[in-house]
Image 1 (cartoon, rainbow, N blue to C red):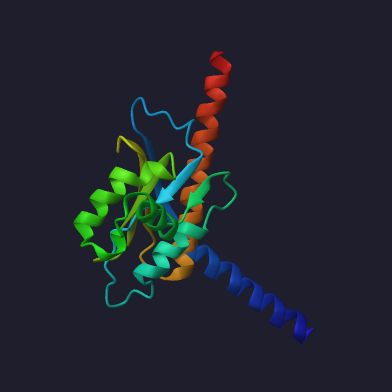
Image 2: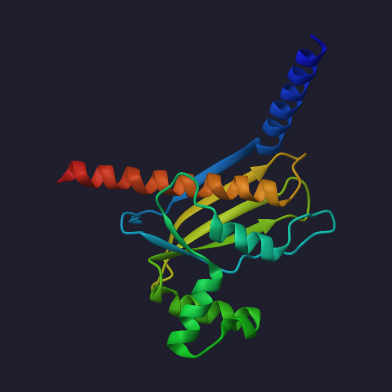
Length: 189
């Protein structure tokens, strides 16, 4: 009986801590007239993130999480490191050695080499709660297509676990938005 109550207590703590860690408010916006149906590959752009004193997440972890996470969506994600290699191979410019502004310009000019769209993440973490913005742009034209905003609970830390959960949520919602647009387009035919 004692063992069962210990297991039950541990399970309750796990469930309550998971709910607290992933409770958030989100907002999805599709730009007027934006066509998401032809997004097959999405590249990860350099995020806009400065690590605050209490943040456990590094910029490199954020970049890696964005490149690894695709959740249940059927979106092919091109990690930032692969985009850098592709741009370097085609243009002989290594954007990892450029300052942030020049690297972003070269990225936007050349990302169409390897993707249909790209996502830039902004983490506003100066105060509580932390807000994650995911902006999706069309590669080549840099037209804003889709935005996704997640406002964390004030108790959430900006750590790797939270970042992975929010990134999965973003990719899943983007995948759902793409699927919905494809269904609507098929009905019109």
